[in-house]
Length: 97
Image (cartoon, rainbow, N blue to C red; front, side, top):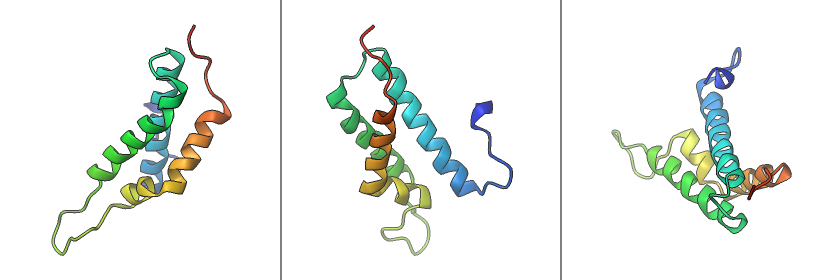
């Protein structure tokens, strides 16, 4: 976890976003490299992981309705998910060794 430490002056929301991105991409990369997921499965798995983050980020306090944390709102955004897919495929690992 030391290479995921907060950067100097980084606000908590930015840190959580960066951390979640890194962890999701690291998981997809390692599973793809180990041939545990096929190329056509990358997008559905990323969407599933994003859904878990969104569900976990729901606000259930007083005056809540459809409120989400800023992290959940980020991951609920389809264009953000598409950027994550693009980042994965920019430097994909070599699978099926």
